[in-house]
Image 1 (cartoon, rainbow, N blue to C red):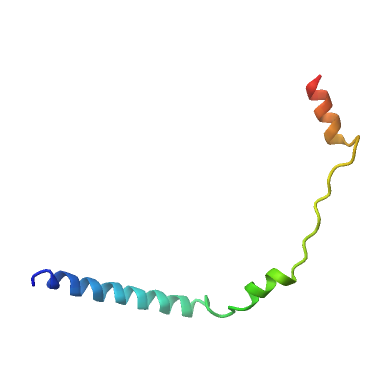
Image 2: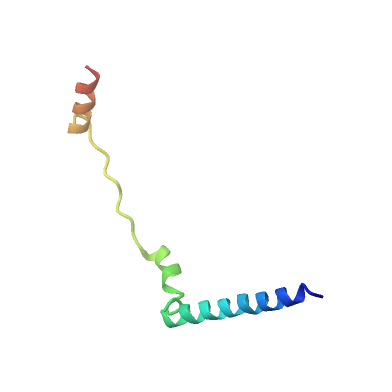
Length: 67
């Protein structure tokens, strides 16, 4: 029975912290736009990475380092 004097205020404190955290998130705009980030995965285009051609400067440096 004595443990309830500890657990009930602890549970109320954790619930209050959750409510305050949710209130902060709503007021700071965390839930303003929930759909755009998910859709942007399908609409953004990636630019291809250009690989160096044979005889480029990178190959020349590697060749000099191995000598």
